[in-house]
Amino acid sequence: MTILEQVTFDLDGTLADAPFERLVLPHVYREMERLGIATPQERLFQEQLRRFDEERRVDAFHWDDLVLQVLRAEGVQASIVMADLIEREDVAKALREEKLFPDVIAGLRAIRALGFGISVLTNGHARYQRAVFAKMGVDTLFDVIVGPDVLGISKPNPAVFTHESLKLPVRMHVGDLLTQDVAVAKGAGIRGVMVARPRQTVDGFERLRAYSPAERPRAALASGLLLQQYEKEHRYLARPLPPAPLTSESDAFPDAIVFSIEELPDLLRTP
Image 1: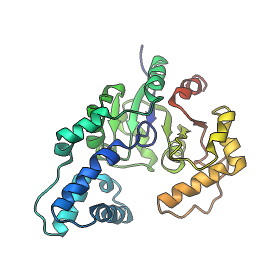
Image 2: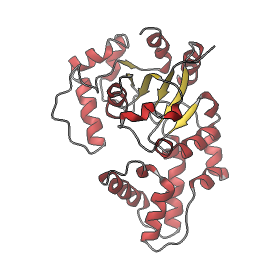
Image 3: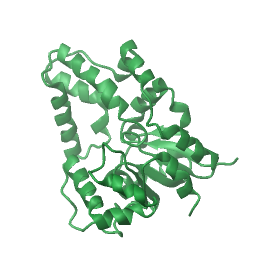
Image 4: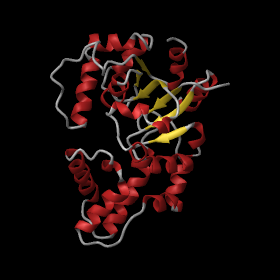
């Protein structure tokens, strides 16, 4: 079967429950504390914010460099290398025991059976996410895993979808964020689908299960749930709401909302 198009997926909150953040970064914080750095998580967060403010989005999730910057600012000459940390037995064991969300593998296999390629398009650096997925034993489910370190840019720049590293045209992008996934895809002329995971969505989203995936966006807009979700994301990203109201014509208005990756094949069967 010749594969002509692909589906791209965000990673954290879409395919898995942020394994790098939950299972690797806590060890980074402990190592930094051992080296004499007080409140390392806050220090790294502030360094991230500084890079965002300077429009250095590619560098904002370069954890080796973030850690190095904080250590050097305190006169610490040691370094913490993410690749080495991921190989450490206690970290590697935790990653081997980690799973994708329960619906993901069956959903991906069904998408593959329809003749689509499957790739990960994340704002986390690919060097870290590939290593994490390799330890989890799921890296072979994906054709490519790309991030800002490969692309030289990051979401919300719509040019991420046309980078040569993705190899195939993108039919659909799936993610948990209206702002960082849906709007970016639709801005690039690609179908943008929101996956609604309980931890990411506002209260009341479960009521949308009564509708089909294609009907859910309008139901969410009419009920106010979509605006609540949109506002929640902007608060999380510490960004002001755009002056234009959220409507069915907005880029952030999803083409569909799914509660499971297994709902995607039916959407892919329709233009």
